[in-house]
Image (cartoon, rainbow, N blue to C red; front, side, top):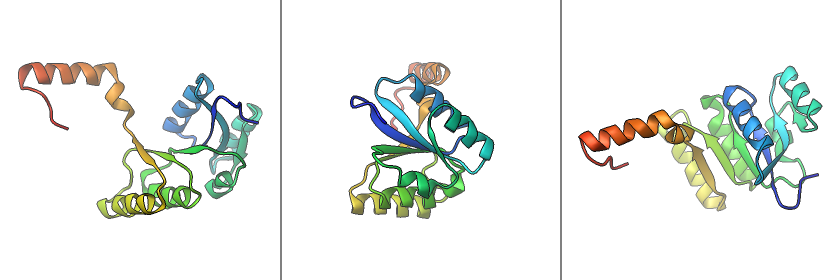
Length: 148
């Protein structure tokens, strides 16, 4: 059962980036990871041993009671299908970059989210990396402000 003061979230994909989200969620005061989905049985077993509901299919996770949001950390080519399922479930979703593997797929997902009024956020975690920040400082000092 999720804490009343922390947002209950699900995590789809327990690869390298998914595991980074898992570790961060475990130390967060803002979210509580209550469910994961991954096709790899060993990953599911690890999550279940930590007291987290574990599913083989992301659609099962989307039916988990009480979810407040979802993180998608699956291979890029699955982002459209998984993202559309999250939108259909009405769950605010953070999708790891890129949002999709083609511009057309990205537009389809953005349009579906807008039509359903379901927020989607694209994870750009490297913006906060100290090396990337330092590089930006150097570029701005030498060339000028980047307009992105």
